[in-house]
Length: 137
Image 1: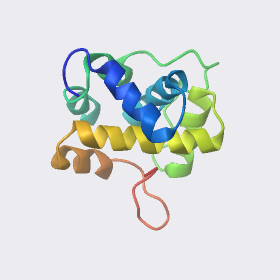
Image 2: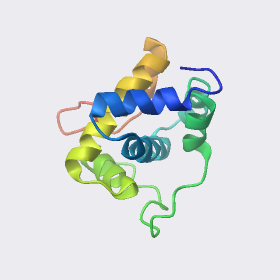
Image 3: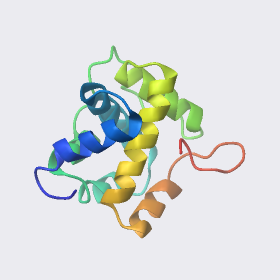
Image 4: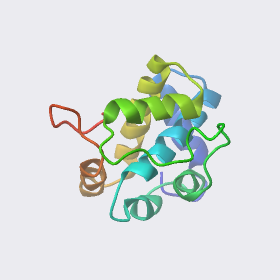
């Protein structure tokens, strides 16, 4: 999944895992990755880009989609998994169930594209829910 033209494979994997059409899976992948880039600290987006297909990595560093300004400002640092999913839902223009399915599929696909250590480090930087579990996993 780390070759330069891996984008179609990444989106296909997200589509298969989520059960959503390819076009919707692509919108969700973009929304999840951009929201993740807002949320992680310590340069992880740059680290993550090196493990993604070129076109997918651009979602982490590229401009946010035109969503009426809703995704322009980073969320507060204490926002948890529910806020992460809300932002994904808003950015992708999908309902909560599709946002949850797509987010899970993106994380599962990322897990395949990264080493266990890199994935754990990335997840450790995501917001936690009240029970201390990383979200939105």
